[in-house]
Image (cartoon, rainbow, N blue to C red):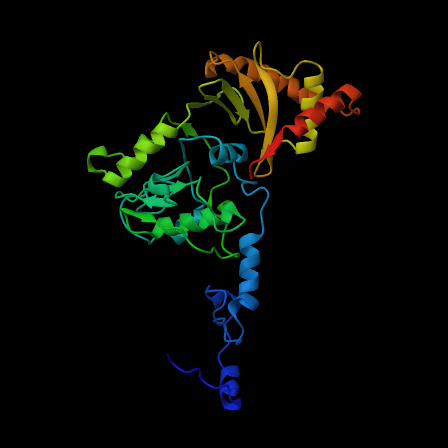
Length: 344
């Protein structure tokens, strides 16, 4: 075992003369290792403090400001298999213009025929650069910081410059000053999810798929719950389970205002979506509230379209009400609050 070098005044003096790195130049190292900035302190007691804070600080609404925020939440928490075509901002495309060759589609850098958000990718990969240069970005992965948007942006940037045919690995820590999705994606482009019955979109060429990906595909398809996005209202998703069906509807309204409105409707007997349906509660996800209805097992997605549209009209009226809740409405609100669950 090598002997420790004695700490002499000369050693301490040379240590103090080490060049000091700027904050943006300090790499991430182990918590107990010397900080690379040259301060002489352990990383966790020096620049690691800011890094740890960036990792643990939770952003309550990570998708706020993106087109289709409610659908981002739904695809992150509710929908098994779905994809959305993404468009990069012009300045991001220009910065990547010289990265690779090949054809260029409007809204994308050269060598990248498409950028697609996917709920899940095979082998739980954070992202994948396909052989043709197209990018798949996985949404339902664990993230290393408290800001899902920043983590996804980091993965997307790495995917755009990864060699074609390669997955993008996870990263232990993401820089707290890196860009967020809101800085990379074109805010003028529509966010239009396509819900799939299974995960066959993973494998455009099934004959050349590896055994590992084929096994992952089989497991994912077996676990997928049939889900349909309603067309008449925003961010409402019907799903089928063995016991009963459900409608889960991600809503953009402030939580307190929405709960008051739901309580008014519930007390008035107007919170259901028709015979045999029942508003059973709600859950919080990424800063938004998601009311949930139980539906009869025979009620399909098409059957719920008209009742959902009619409920949306009733809800708009209830949201506009300003008078205090009645005692019955307060009781209804208490029941809804007691049945509320926080997912994220």
